Image (cartoon, rainbow, N blue to C red; front, side):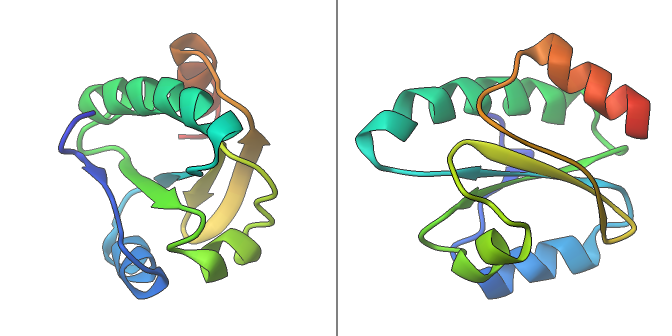
Length: 112
């Protein structure tokens, strides 16, 4: 995963990153239970590539559900991996499950 993907350790850090971003934010939520590990690894690769390709146009955040429970609840996250796209602080897209790079690019291109 690229170093362009922020990895907050708690809700306060997650909120700080969102508050400092002048561009839309793609936040994806991961889990550490056995059935979530492999799909989350897939998302790590997809989002890492997206972070590199959309540098300056998008902030990417990887949030662990157990470390950021308030953010998880705020965005209605019920499984991992899940993602939300925030534009000017408002959720404009969301989904659950791993997505391909092509699907992620389409989502971003439709909303950025």
